[in-house]
Length: 296
Image (tube, rainbow, N blue to C red; front, top):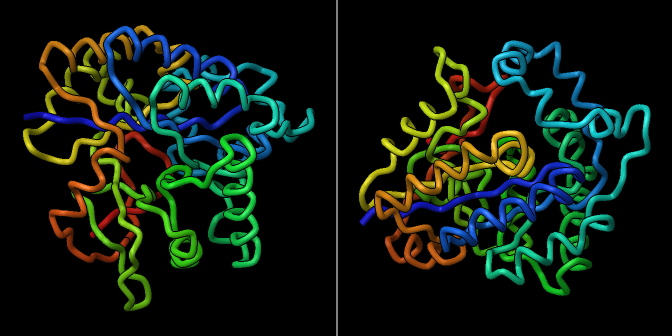
């Protein structure tokens, strides 16, 4: 049997207010559940402009027509406009996902600052970032988070160690092919890593001339029998400008009788299979600027 977990990353206020309801409607039409991961702190999207100097960033944006994903207002947050606190402005939309039966968990506090400056931040800064993210989640849902996935599949020894203290059922901080327990400084941690295993729409769109429909066909062809298939999407992309493409992707899953499972539903089975311990490294992957963490 082919199964897949749909990982929905929510990065911005606009993606929360508009993208969450849009994706909920799409998922409801095909009767599938997903795992929603929320950014809860300040939307500092405007500060992402500093990435223009990163290798491959500008080419990816032009190939993807990324300007269609974000409004001008979003691109001004944290620069010319104050950065709104997403968890306070979009709590109702976040709760809609839980009310509809989807998994809800943590993606970030300040998404952009973590994404861009992770290795420059002190351990104290990172501890505060995690503390604020977990507190923000509890403010919205009145309960502790059981899972978390990091922005841009980036982590380091500090973040993995800090995260361990929260006793999560799992985390998704890297790319890879199988679930595993991360080894940090010679110690095997208890927080299971559930990596994203499939390429994303924004990575493949335009790469080697691929159209959105061709990307769908490619990704659907990579979904394997009795394997960990994790597909990541974004409320700003699949819940916005490329919604029609995602509707076709969902229909493709349905036509192929692929069963959608949330991370929370899948994790007990993954743990029962006695996953290995492994270190986490870094690499660049086609279609994405900069490095990502990867299970070795």
